[in-house]
Every structure is written in C-alpha cells, then in structure tokens.
Length: 565
Image: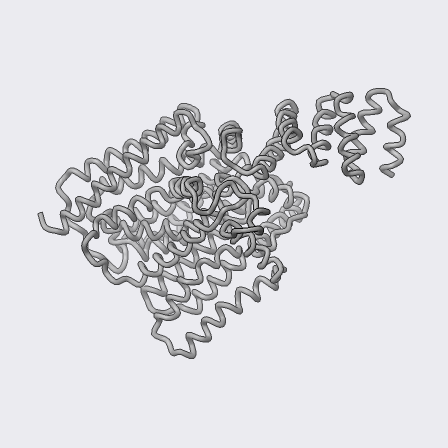
C-alpha cells in the first residue's frame, strides 16, 4: 500500500469515526432534548415517522462510511478542469423541471412558525408596512418590494405568501450551487456529490419559507463566492467580484468579513498597481454608495459596529451589554459547536478528514483553496467575536452567514476523498447531510414541533440573558393569542410580569389577553396598572372601557371613552 493509499485510509477512518460520534450525539441529544445541544437535538421533537426517516438516513451514512474506511482503497480519480460534459449538457427543459421540483419541496416543507431570528417582527413589519432594518437595506428593500407587490395584486400579506421570497432565493441559490460545484469538483461524480452536499447544508434552511433579511443575504454571499472561485481559477473577473462584494455588503453589513478574501484576489491578480489601487478604491466606495442610496448612513454603521464589538469590550462599557457569557468561555464554544453542527456538519467533517489525509504533506498550491480558506477564516473569526443578547439558537441565521464559506471550503477540501472513495463514500456523505437537514426542516415545518423546540430553547434551563427570555416569552404570548389559545398566552404573560414588572407593555398585554378570555374583572387591574405606568396607550384604554362596560360599570367606562377621543 503506497503513501497516498495510507493517507486516504487515514482520512476515511477519521471521517467514519467522526460520523459515528456525530450520529451518536444526535441520538443521545434527541432522547431528552434540552437547550444545551440545540444544534443536534432536533430529531427529538419529531413524530415517529420523521424520526425513523432521519435516523435511517444517518444510519445508512455511518454504515457506508465504515465500509469505505475498512475496504481496500479505490483508485483515485485524477483531477479535471470540468465535470463530465454529459452532466453539464442537461438541456434547459430538465433543468427547469428540477428547479421547479426543488421550489415545490421548499414550499411543502416551508417554516410554519417564525420564532427563530426576528421572523415574527419582520412578518408584522411587512404586513403593517412598518419595517426598519438600516444595517441590511438591500435585503429590506427586496422584502418590502415583495410585500408591496402582494398589496398591488390584492393578495394578503401573510407568512404563506411572503414565503415565496425565500423560496425564490432558494431557487436562485440552486443555480449558484451548480456553478460552485463546477468550480470545486473533481470529475462528474464529484460534481454531483458537491452539488448535492451544497444543497443539503443546514444553512439552506433559510430558503424554506424563512421570513427575515437573511435569505437574500445568503444568495449575495454565495454569488460572491462563485465569482471569487471563477476569478481565482481563471485570473480574470475582478470587477465582477468587486460588484458582487458591494451587493453583499449592501444586503447586510455583516458581509464585510468577506473583505480579506477580496483583497487577496486583488493583490495576487496579474494587474498593474494602478488598477489594483482603483479596484481597492472601488471596493470601498461602491458598497458605501449603495448603502447611502438605500438609506443606511454612518450613524447606523457605527451602531452596528458597537453591537458587533460589544462582546469583546471590558470595563465600564461592558457592564451595559447584555450577554449570556464572555467571549472566551465554554458557553460560547458550545454554542459555536452547535451552530456548526447544525449548519455545516458534513463539510466540517470533510475538512477535518482532509487535514488528516494530508498530514505530513504540503498541500498543493491552489488559489481557489486559498480564497475559500481566507473567507472561511474571516467568517469564523467573526462568529467567535459575535455574542448577542438573544439566544444563540435563535440567532442561528446570522451566524450561519458567517459560516457559509466554511461549508463550501469543507466540500472543496474533501473532494479528493469523495473522488477516490467510490459510490459508498458519496452515499455516506449525502445520507448524513440529508438526514441532518431533514431533521431541521421537518421541525420547522411543524407548528407543534417548532413551538415545542422554541419553548425548550428559552425555557428555565436555558443559559440565556434576561433580555432573550423576555423577548421569547413575548413572542410566545403573541403567538398563542393569535391562535386563540389565551390560556397558554396568559401563562407567558404571567412569567413576563413576574420577571419584568416595570414594563407597562406586559401589563397591557396581560389585560388584553384576559379581555380575550372574557375575564373582565381580572383584566381591569392589569389595564389600570398599564395606564398608570404609561398613560398614552389608546389600545389599553379601549380594552379598559370594554372591561368596564362588560362589568356594568358604565360611569367608569365613559371617562375612558372620552379620554380616547
């Protein structure tokens, strides 16, 4: 057995061991799902058929990886510039049919609850025409254009209609993934594997009817990565790359982490010093111009910078920052591990297996690999520095944007393992990747499972800030009120009043909930307290007047009505 075969065997053994540990961790975490293992506990919230499907896929993947690890290594497929022409020559008709089928899957498995991220806030803002997201102006403009178009067509602005935006983003992303797979794959089989691995990353959960700024932002990041890979391989296209970077930054300021990878390609390209300086100047001026034109100014940029760097501060400034843990802490490390196991589990395993495979050998020089490595490293540093007041499990979407390049890099790094391992290794990686994604998607596609998981994530045993808990309890109270389950809504209002009694909004919410239950006598003191703390609440006065009238206390109801006028 030559050295190359030994190194491949080491890579396969590492992947098989990692896959087994990953699936065992999922099995244990799903047995009694709690808030700590939020990246791998998803199957525990599914009904039996969903669990069987997920664990069957995961089990097949682990079994296939074990067979590959202990069988004689297959002959490695030599690298090629392009995938097999037969695959790439699929005509427009079948391509469109596949794309339509994928969009149908995104629709059928769309998110039914919108607790994660700021989904409910975005849904309300788009429905009411009152949405402000100055740090993500292009993404905001896309969503507002969609909601405006629905109104012009006379269609209701609901989660089901707005879901078409993220589904459309998913369809565009599939086209981008096709291009990325062409750039990073070895051979025809490697192309198919790379494409399907990209399509089944956990980050694609953003395209299953997700309502937030992040689906368009993810499209912009992936378009930038595709432009960068083509530029790195062909040595041209820097202007298009700068344009893609500007669009990404205009969609969300967090994408500034892509700047080092852009600078790398500009500095290494075969261009004159004058052109380099012009491209760097354009990379600074164009995003800033787009942001200003879209209504985002320096004040918003500074505010975003303060939020992003808040976790790293020390001294008096840090005392005002609400955070569940320090930036260097076990809790932060656990949450980062969770988000990577949720968003890029198989690419992460492939990356580590690729490192094991290459141990003791200098990796081949590769501009695409260096480009992806720099983008991944910068994104990972951003994720390490990001500690926000809300629960990490709730803000998974923002962190996933930082980890997207790592997913592409992992698939690139593991391509030789996939190429030389034959069909079994492809079955393994795709089975595990699909099983992991399905667990996430099926939970979000179920009202019951999605709500149970969210209640677990913000429950009494969750290590989150008071702010995150109040935010979550208020979302749950509104959710249950909207569904007519006033009893469950009132349970969360009670929790809010016990933990943050100084907030008049919670007193008003409790009173309104009791009015909905017909418990007018109990509603009066809560509504009165809300008005004592914040007199200028017209809706609260209305509810108080309704309560007095229902109790026959008309003299007290009349002043309330006159005050409203």
